[in-house]
Image (cartoon, rainbow, N blue to C red):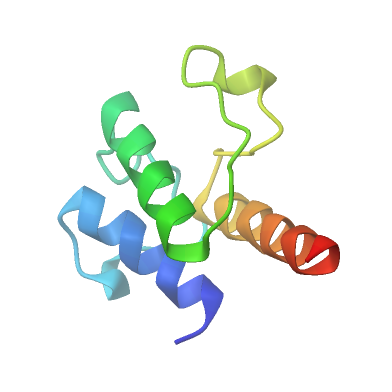
Length: 88
C-alpha cells in the first residue's frame, strides 16, 4: 500500500467512510471530521509512519502541517517521511 493510500485510509476511517469515498480535493470538514477527529487522525498518521507531526490543534493556521485538503495532508506526510529517512 502506498503512503497516499495509507493516509487516505486513516482519514476515511476517522470520517467513517470507505477510502474510495475520500477525494484528494476534500477538506477534513468536507468529510465531516471535526477538530477532535483531526487530532485523532494525526495521532494515527504519526503512529503509522513513525513521524512527529508539527501540528497545533489550537492554531492550525499557524502550523507547518497543512490540513486544508487530503492532498495537502498527504504531501505534508510525504515531506516528513522523507525528512526522517534523510536524517536516519
